[in-house]
Image 1 (cartoon, rainbow, N blue to C red):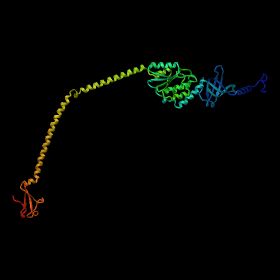
Image 2 (image 1 turned 90 degrees about the vertical axis):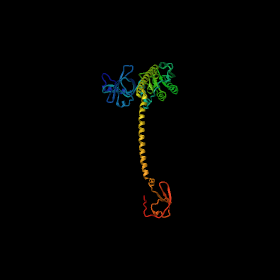
Image 3 (image 1 turned 180 degrees about the vertical axis):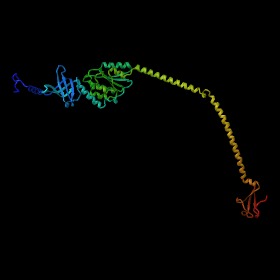
Image 4 (image 1 turned 135 degrees about the vertical axis):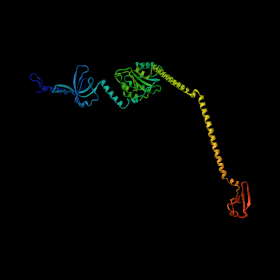
Length: 410
């Protein structure tokens, strides 16, 4: 009988023992276990690894089939601390015990990091971390808003280093819890209060470092969205290097420490004085060069004849003027002489064509009383009143009988 206990006389076959072991293990069902991954190897889409206890020297093998691996929400590797939902599985043929994994996730710090990375990707997808949203810091802030713990080292570091660099800088302090349950609400309210202050030119959120869990509040979604909506430029100075809270990503500037924030926000007065002196020296050299160039140019202008001997231009122009006057007088005389000759010629032509010349030679003009010129005897019958115009004066006459020879005798 297979249910009878095995004895020396009636031992169980190996197969029976193996099946009983498998049946007993399968009755255990699934269980959540925690441990450290000491081996992680992928083959054909499946994962074969080992999980070690965190305190004791105990290790179990596990298998993640490809269908389960595709549903895992994050990547895993050797050294990760995880919790896994497993079911023991005894392989009869090989006589080995392995854990079939149905779900796996990072535990503790890993779990928090996983949630943090999901939030980081979500906010980055909304554009809250874009470089185009970053506001430039003022060159010389007259008033700095400081969000920090009261009487903290971070407060002292920021104020001391800022005033060493620029003694005239002022601070408006907004104290808040920088860890614990009250941290998110108080820091958010402090930022909003300083952002509404018209005297504040830039805001610094400072804390003197801390472990990852103490800094988790600076990755709270409510705080990150409040910083993104802040109008005043904001500097994150949490004082850490290993971990990077989301405040660093959304802030307009990330400073590695509170001391670094003071140096990044406030210029050094000695450096600025040196730059002013250098600028004044460059300006003086430039002006000296310009003046020297203009003095040389004026010297060259003064060496020209028109300025060195001013009477030169008057003398030269006087000679030109005398020459032009003589030439003008000569041309005018020629024009007058030519015009006189023309007048004489025209006068001669006029006299030759004038009726007066004809009258002067002894001829006369005979006209009727109406002024018509008598050209034939038929125009003036006997007793016709006539007007005879002579070279000197006129005569009234009466026409007589016509003669046969109209040609007058000399």
